[in-house]
Length: 108
Image (cartoon, rainbow, N blue to C red; front, side, top):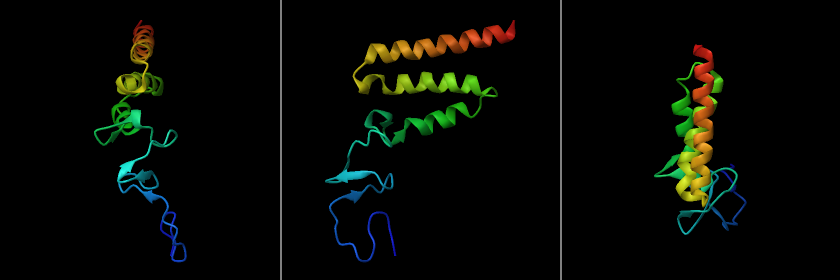
């Protein structure tokens, strides 16, 4: 019977799996940064940014509005953790300005 990386014949337990995020590697009980699947700068207080974006943007009727709002949230979320604080804030502002302009153009 297979379970993740282990099966009944495999006794190589060199890497453990994180019970919070199946398949994410851990070392000494702490998650290892997985730059592709679970970057640390996108997971704060046990909440992953992509999950918050999914929740926030599900209410937008227009996909483009949801996309821009998601980008705003992404850049605000990671700003204090990625090492490019001002740049991430400026990117969030750029997407917010684009969203506002798009809505203004649609209203006119």
